[in-house]
Image (tube, rainbow, N blue to C red; front, side, top):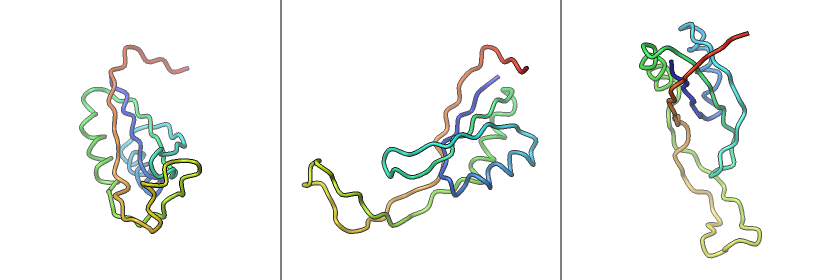
Length: 109
């Protein structure tokens, strides 16, 4: 058994959740915040048998696309102003960061 942890952008959360339910995979959703853009993320925890890992990864890839977005930088409060850019910059957001961990034991009560 494996535990798949997928950190995705909030905009992709409902689409991924619906796709997992359609394919009869159960998941736990947690609200999280990214460190770089300080933007909202959703972290999915999905427990699956080893034989289903590839299918879950396909579902994540199909529903969590990366895209370009203009972001207004946060001014450095007491930080190094040398690296501060005072105008919006285009960054790549979205997609998914996925971790796959072995599960030694699983109990459901």
